[in-house]
Image (tube, rainbow, N blue to C red; front, side):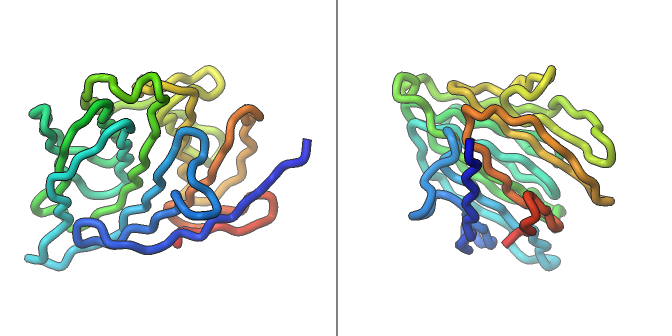
Length: 211
């Protein structure tokens, strides 16, 4: 089987007053499996007294919003009455289903902000599911050589994340502050994407870095 690689350049946009690098959707690639938005938020440091991120009320339908926090904190509120601060190493998952509205804002006295926010398209049969909000403060985490792996959603090897999903999916964070090398077994039935959030990554001899 011939492996097909595609490099996608992120485009910079503004969301709630902070820079966001959006990798998909773009003309060249609308989705990666059920992942339909890949946003890299920050890293940003707010000046003392400066307003932080403030994303006002807005609706979603037929998808899930998935937030993976790296630095700082974000407060989530929604039309179900949910109110949840997300901190580094945690996942917030909002299942919009037939409809929900929410806001996101920086937490006072938290000058740093760095996160990935991804959207997951719901299968047609589940697009009218009742809306809900789930917070995952603890996720499967293990060491493989110099690299720390955190399973954000789906299954990998013997590990299974508790994160709610409606179609086959995988989200895996690889953290190697001192560098390292890893070989991952991948399901050939899946589409896979690598989304660099810090530093530089080399895959198949090609260097990738956050944009």
